[in-house]
Image 1 (cartoon, rainbow, N blue to C red):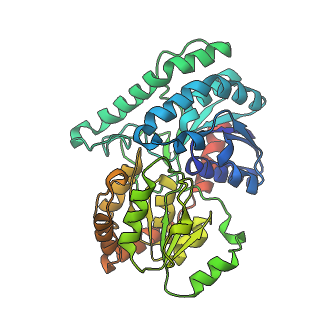
Image 2 (tube, one colour):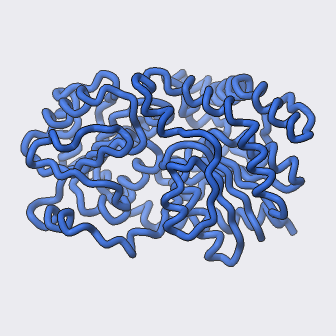
Length: 400
């Protein structure tokens, strides 16, 4: 079996797809991964054949003030490059048995599968299949439960309206007829834990909650000497990291974090933010990328942006989170952890203060929060999301 995986997004979007691709290769099959150039490091570390798609998501996100209108900025990037992406996908996918589609490249990937005359399989990190169990994760508010299913339908239609013109222009260049309606019949695999999002009973049979897709890097990771020394020098630290988030008010965020944590031992990962870590207090130790599966179990709690991957990894480690969300589905994961008893506060990155963050950290440090986090972590560590997804990919890519 030969598969093409196409995704476009931040590192948090590409890393799980690289993990899935690695699991497919370990099962004896072939994979080609397409994604943004700045997010392909994990794929390369795992030995997964990968190609960079046109565009630069890091520059788009890091532009001054970009976070204030991140949805429009990412939409503009997708619209600009849809034609390039479809050409690249068709060229890379020749001879494949199926196309796995994800992220901002989903409509392009679905069109590529049509051009290649092979099945398309959705692989998402956010539950977008319509359901009455919860509202669309992308809504900026929580509607009455009666409107949950309608909110998913509305988001799908709005997304299609936003990208339809660019998608159909790309399809025309590839010799495909225009698409008039949103794709709804292809199977959907979610790299999401059922402990956080139990599978809704009103989902179609071809929508599956697999569990988190984790790159197997923790077992081979050798920590730098300074990180090992810091961890050995005292009690488990607080981890602070905002992943691929950038273009926000760095000074406000740093002031809030430093003010909230005081003298607590802290590991700080600036990620894509561009924060100058040399200005942090002496009790803060700056780090680069470290596999979450290795690092987070060695921490007391984590302050992060609430991306799907970081939220899952923190929960899997069995430690409390304090989510400071900025955009998109981050507010959804914030609400999930509040429902699970791991968090109590609803924060916002755009208006974060030291006082609000201090209160949230105080709750995360309680026995109650630690107990809820431990229960959640125990459940998630018994999941094998990659193996579950590989079996489903084989079912849908090679039916019969």
